[in-house]
Amino acid sequence: MAEPTGDKKKEAKQKRPSALKRDMQNQKRCLRNRSYRAKVSTAIRSFEKSLTEKESTEAIQSKLNTIFSLMDKGVKTGVFKVQKASRTKSRLHSRTV
Image (cartoon, rainbow, N blue to C red; front, side):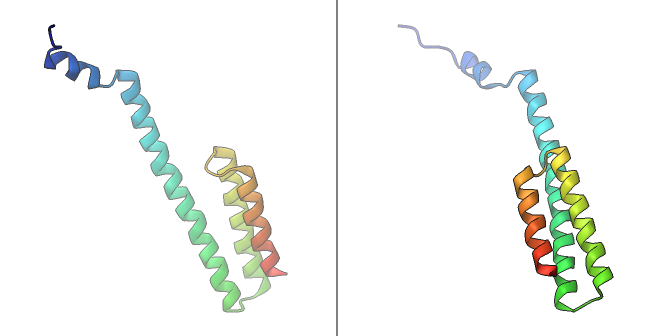
């Protein structure tokens, strides 16, 4: 019984061009989504800091509006799911009241 040569095994392990393209696309999206989530979490930290420092209500409201805007844009682009954005916005808004 003849064993398969090493060349065939190497060929089987190589990825197809479409799979390589898909990997590159996924890596780009991963980086883009990660940076966007970092931007949102930075905005949330800034909002929480302004709450603890008892800043003016206008400043707090403007920071809250930027978070809402970022979350909605994140849902639109697929970074966040709809329910996560709603839950986060609701929890942050309840902290201002």
